Image (cartoon, rainbow, N blue to C red; front, side, top):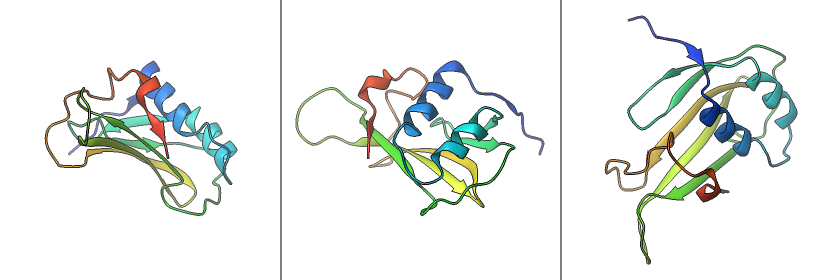
Length: 120
């Protein structure tokens, strides 16, 4: 099956830039790779696979940065949506999106107010 590869939307780019905003070993090269990124949609939750070029980088973990937001309004415990940035062989590889309880995501990342995304 052939995949459709495209440039990041402005909102997707801002989301990944926010995930890459903390300083950590390798972040500068990942930011440079982001400038060359093409992506393909993986699932209905908004997860993306990356194709990038540029020098690889060393990161301490496969997921060097991640964030979360709460999917529903209200108080008390509620499921969070997690957004993880995966790096494989020193290259941006995947933006993974999933909800704690596996239920459908009510506020997809493509309409999320990025001020609601908390970095871990």
